[in-house]
Image (cartoon, rainbow over all chains, first blue to last red; front, side, top):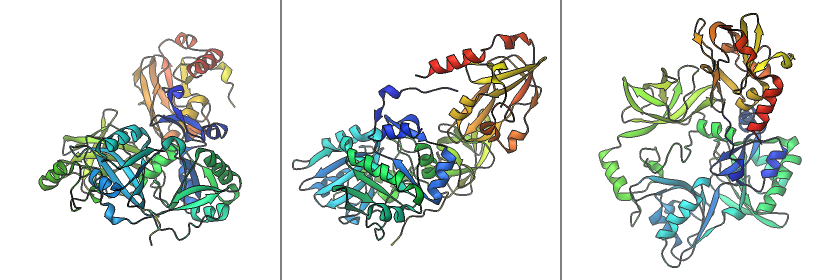
Length: 374
Length: 129
């Protein structure tokens, strides 16, 4: 066993003391100290699927993009077509480099054509801000609001009823990937119907101070309604079962959206093109040489990051995420494989501690999504 | 609860209980907590010769894979077969039903050179802060 101890260098969210008080096992993630679990990954995973778990996701970054031409700027700098969303809606989007490699995956909250919030991955806040600033034309204002914005995710089948009961938030009729402003204790909060777990759920953005009060209310009055806290460990097994990619593991600047199976977030049709579109268009024309594949292990071994993947006797790629999956009750993973091996049903092998173990490519998600659809 | 004061320990969080030439090996309560939800255990092969600090087997939890080391030199003579079906026993009972394997020691005195409980507690506390 090895103990990774970087606690002093890690940033703390406004809820840090709460995690420690609850007995959270703190680990480093994207530069932040966050609980990997409070009681156990398995129980927190199952609780999320059955009831309602709350996660501190304050490490996420929030970059506000405002000004005349904000829409056109983001249309050009990001890959997806913002024309698909109206105010109050959210769009999954990608920030790519000039070669079409993925710098970050971003949720774009559209307030108006001149005002957007970008929710970005914790480890990429500075990099994204720089990349966006470098491309912004005069009149566009970029504000990094990350350090003064906290976020709590409430995920699971009971999340809707619990938010309605505890806060009187009108979330019942919110469509998936929409957001609205509400108030709590006289202060504004922004609630979106979104999340990473594959369950129905919400993310509640607020000031740092208010997040503490929201957290306390959820755990005190919410306890009898079915709320428990959950850590990064469960968040990871939940997202993997939901087939969601983790930026930095399942995609990075060396992978393109087409290789990562994120073609749905790339619009070649939008007017004016976008930054990095030429290499991607080229790749679309010629076809990718490797592609992300979801797989299920055929025995009890667990594939972990960087393990080699073999197909037809040849090394064909590597695992990028792998875990025991509690809801699947089996071992699953994601990885890149040479083109042709990504089709569901294909038999592959993963090298685990020097032995090749059988696995089968399957369709994503591993567990059907429970997202609200209107 | 086993009398853990009679056990010997390694810095890698294994415990050893010596009876004659046979050293029974498991992981400490601290280790099972760190590893958390154990979902698969790859036990060593009976008859395999090991040296102290050799990786003897692997414990997989939801979190990660962990190598478990042979504390002393010898031959693996027995494994806890029960764990193939119920690996979570190691979380529930690390010192008793969750033992892992037994080594027939080349030199039973080697066990004496391992950490005492007090030394282990001390080593564990200084590796944290």
